[in-house]
Length: 306
Ligand code: HSE
Image 1 (cartoon, rainbow, N blue to C red):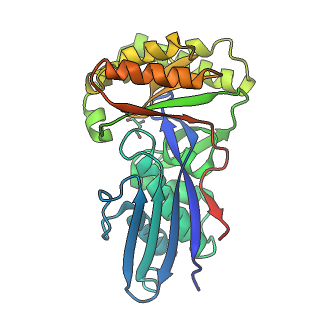
Image 2: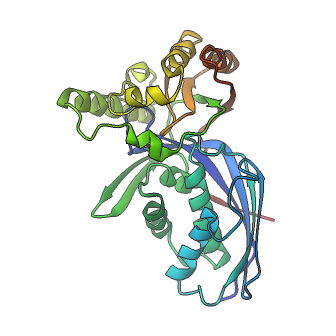
């Protein structure tokens, strides 16, 4: 098969949405673009611009390249295509809980698949992405777009996607420090109480119903979480104050984005007021931050026309 040069756009994502730990995800209107040309010779070059430039490896250890290799191996083309030229233009903040690794994995898989004429299905790509990332909560919305509910059954990821009927924005406070997911998982207990589990089941069910129905009535009750955020607070100075400041400024709810350290407030107006209040609350804890106002992305990873 002859490979064609492709350009892919892939969104950043936020996992958990408060209570839906390792299950819920949402695709955000903040994007990485990826160009890929596969070579039959062994020429190899990776260029990185924007977020992560100077930090992301430009070697065979690059996660985009490793993901490309997974597709080549899966379709039996690894012996044909030994080299690649990869150009990354990144806007998704690196290692901040906005799905930068999921965007890299899904971007690499989607680009390689499209370059080869799409021999693999979306479900094949979800399986590969989940195997690489270890869980589907970020890779699913990066691949499909919208809001996603993902489970893994017998090693096989299953994802239900929908577009929320409720109109809202996500005000994302981005603190100026990295928090590796591994470190943010190490602080979590192995066992939780029945009461805590019930709190999260209730919040998650309430959130999904609220978003599918398009009624904000119970939205404020939908973010209560007892499985992860209180343990992670010690890693994110000012987390609770930032949540309180966002709500005081008019947000409907606030939560840790994925494993953090980004914090997200859900709003329907007053976005700049909320963003500035979040920034100010972070400054009170000597944390510099910026903020972005994002919408729900509906498309997921997309092949762009040149
Ligand atoms: N669900 C994950 C966590 C998000 O909270 O650790 C990172 O993929």
